[in-house]
Length: 423
Image (tube, rainbow, N blue to C red; front, side, top):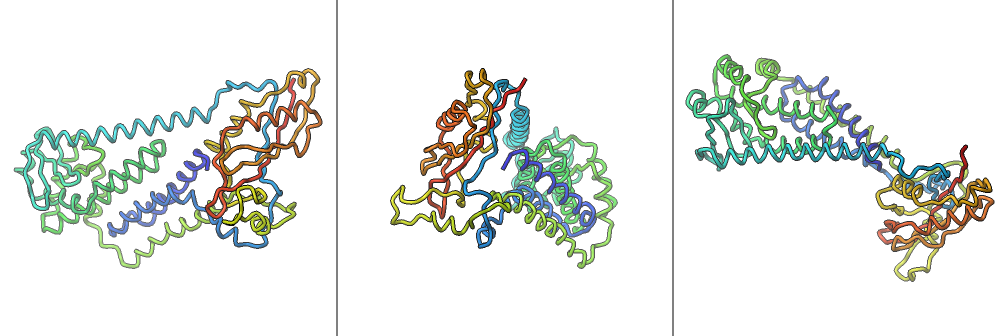
């Protein structure tokens, strides 16, 4: 699947899941369910674009092939083709990959900063291998994995409230959520929706920690004052949970709101319904079979005719025209067309004689991925053009071979070459 198309599908799914969660679930007090829903939504957004029900397609005995040969898109050749034409797709890939590298580096730096604090700070051991790290430069406490970072001043003044809050983060493994979300944010750094999902998840974490504090019987008003005081504190590490949270308004509302009714849990099915719809939609889009009304033979008959058995010798069968895993050019079909454009030659003699035309070349990808037996099945009408197309096919690099029932097989393919002259 094309990289940009994949990212577009991921973005569409993230937007849909975000809107559904924000409208129907964000105000509910089912924090555990909401936390799972957020994590599951982002995971599904990255997985669903790969959905493919090809196995079901192969079970349909009435499916017919468009052609007897798997046909690639045409390659257009003209003498003005500039091999150094700027490739915008390449620029986009470079920008995206560079951004991923930068954000991964920032995340790594954040983790290193936390590890440095652990190494340099004064340590106090608690139960269950949990440790308190004292750092007087901290304006607001935070926690990470099994470490609580706090200043001596906060420890002396608000020890009980802060420790309960940060211990809740640790016991509920919120740091794991944040590390996971940071990785996804690095991969989709240009997509604001993934960052908004991270913000939502952080809010859920704080709701859960606030609940644990209020369960201890602490005065709610006193606790809110503590949160307001720490709201002006410094920014904590992006991979850690902190007492400071800028959106205190939502936290205060959640502390005082009534518990959601059990019936409200049914809303969790909304994202599932949306996910199911997109699974079907993307599955249809991902099918590699090209079907139309001009077919002349059924797929099942062709597959059965070309079926390889253990008793067959290497070349004791006709090449497949369609198989379960079609051959793949290195880096995909887009790279194939780029390679063809860069390697095809428009013969000078043909240009001088103003020869143009379209020829069709059939060739076989063997079990080793080598291109063999290129043949003109429809001539352009000019020998020079036909020969140039054959020469280009023969120069192709090794493909990833096709497979049927887990075994590598020979596959017949076809590609049109369209030679054009422009003024």
